[in-house]
Length: 239
Image (cartoon, rainbow, N blue to C red):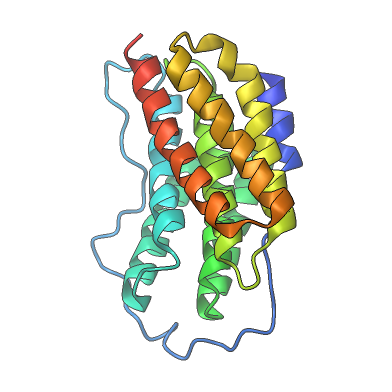
């Protein structure tokens, strides 16, 4: 069962990422959506005792990919990434509580609006919030604690804030504080002292970088934090 601390902390950082004034992208409505984009999320393995968790975590993956690539993808690639994420959201909707399903639908709508307006940073920010909704509602029954996925969310949101023009330092600070909250609940479960110390140090560096408006430190610390999330996933899967 998911810890209430995870859910409440996630909701506290569930901020709408929006901006205005960017010119409309004249190609946004002329790019084609690939015909092979499915309308459902990947099926969970039959032997998986928690199919709902597996399905929601699988549904989150296209949003992770979209968040990572939104600012660098070509216009056509961005349309394809959004289409895949939207298909996952449609498939996952019935697995979510009504309120979460409504929020997910709104995030997808916001993503499409941001893409039409030529605002890739806002596409990324809306996408990462959709990712948070899915992993927060997946349950905490698998080998990898929900907090690990929410550390991933924190790093992605932090980096998207850094790529905005101008950088959204205040929101980056909230993302780093959210990461600290997740680590406070998780760190004692990690017996690998090196891994534990590295993650603690990088989250500290993320917060320090915000305080000093140090872009170089912010990018390096958050990139390492995301790498360490991968290491944490391997650690918990190997226990």
